[in-house]
Amino acid sequence: MSSSKGKARERQLARAKYERQLARRAATARRRRQWAAGLVVLLLIAAAVGVAWLLGAFDPEESGQETDTEVSVPVDDENAPADDEPAAEEDPAGEAEEDPAGNEEQSDDGSDTDETDSDGA
Picture 1 (cartoon, rainbow, N blue to C red):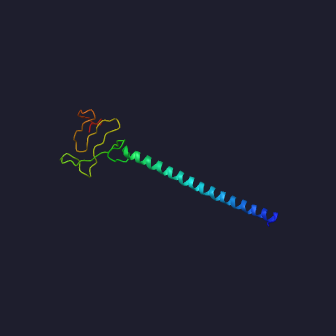
Picture 2: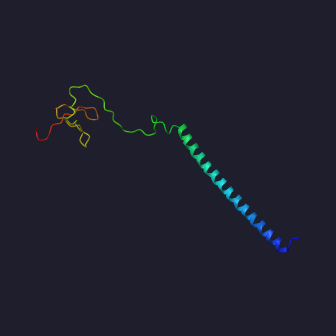
Picture 3: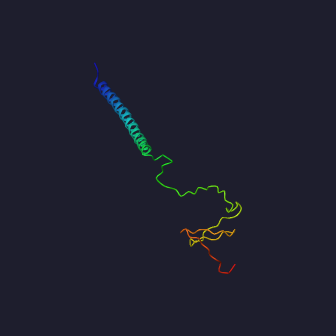
């Protein structure tokens, strides 16, 4: 028959085996929870991108912000300045200046401006 020393050893080995099994099961459960949490985060991100796409966030032609862009249109006008001549610019006061060719320009309010220089030239 078994001695009390042998039974104590069996109990000790059985307890160690049980603790290893518990540790293995806990690690497996922890990995499963981490995968599930990662999957939930991935699905939430995918859902957010999908909703944004459905609402038109990625449509380039219907953007929420209008940009101030100028479109240059070719002009077939003999009075248009040549490419090497600078175009007339407005001064900071908002009044139009005469261009070098002597043509009159219209100010922002639509009236013709006919200003003369103060030095008489």
